[in-house]
Amino acid sequence: MLKRIISGIVGIALAVFIINFGGLPFLTAVLILTVLGLLEFYRMVSIKGKKPFKGVGVISGLILVLLTYFNNKSFVIGDIILPGLIVALFMVFSVQLIKNGTEDTIQNVAITFFGIFYVVGLISHFILLRNLKNPILPGINAIYFALICTWATDSFAYFVGKSFGRKHLAPNISPKKTVEGFIGGILGSFLAGLIYSIINGFSPFKAGVIAFLIGIVGQMGDLFESALKRDAGIKDSGNLIPGHGGVLDRFDSAFFTLPLTYYLIILFF
Image 1 (cartoon, one colour):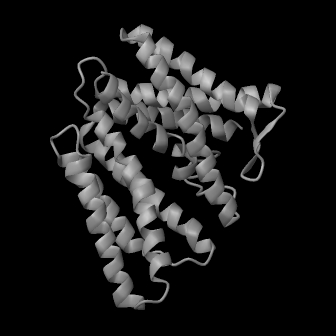
Image 2 (image 1 turned 180 degrees about the vertical axis):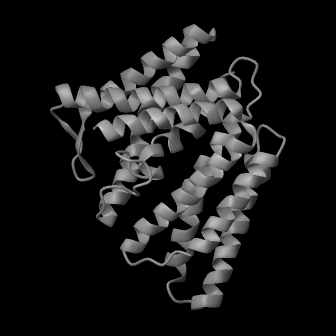
């Protein structure tokens, strides 16, 4: 527990510095998370005997992140990410044909490409949020809003579930998660969003709606990663962070809440 607390404090301090500083440290951090996240995902599916093209996946992921970062537009999904994913799919398919012909084509291509979509397509929203030029909720504030609500979701879900949990939420995926904890997570995110909006002077109603949805989507992201790990028969996706597992363990919820926050801010503000 002490190791978990210490690594958590160090991680938070480092994240605050990187987010506030922006620039090269921020880009470097996202690139590192991209590589580690992809390798963790491909390791999980390899345990099941699958054969993803790790090199192609990692290279495609890094290129997508760099294209997203150096694009000056605030909304780059149609301009960069979707075309980039299509190019990545073509690269994966080409490597499959060269190395394996038609053997396991659907399986190898689909798994490699899904890793790119899951890790890179979602993690790139760190950059999109950081570069968001919104007069009411600009980039840094938007990232903190998303991460604080996500953290509140995880914390409230854990403590409420541990204290009052009775009814299992998804026993086949994560036996310890409960319906009561799920509701507690939503409430925690909602309260965090309201407090954050009051402190920073923007609409509590809009913040409450976004935070409420973060509470739901964040826990679904957690369950999704739990399903991947259970299928692979492992407890953690990696061991990068002492007491916290790997990148996918630490950012499983944020991978889903960052895109949600980005698009809802564009829609509401």
